[in-house]
Length: 146
Image 1 (tube, rainbow, N blue to C red):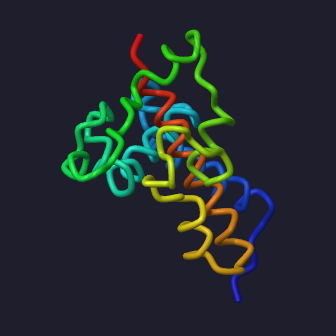
Image 2 (image 1 turned 30 degrees about the vertical axis):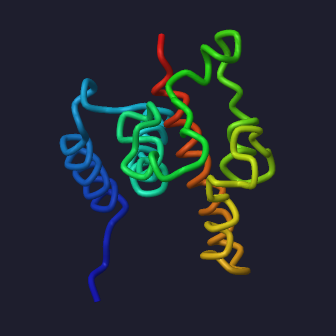
């Protein structure tokens, strides 16, 4: 068994800290937590929404011509809401609590319900569902037309 002196432990800890500090990304490459969440929403959008709303979110996805109501241009949500992005309303739309008039009988899948079904009753998975919805809504907020 190796006996460590207090001085040896401190030196080892300092060396480890220096190595980790040196490995960190340069300040210009670091992103804010908000940017990370928005970026994480893009693949969620691409997987679940782009088929109807298009990769650019303007409503021209490959399945859009098969629907009874043309998918919305999701880049215009803020503009159509007096310049304010209705964050929690959009959360409700994605998770299925908020009905959209244009969807009539719910042409748009209720992704929140689908995500919850995938998560079953696992509490950790349920938290991940809320996180996935938040990622998607933050992404939608980030792509609004100026």
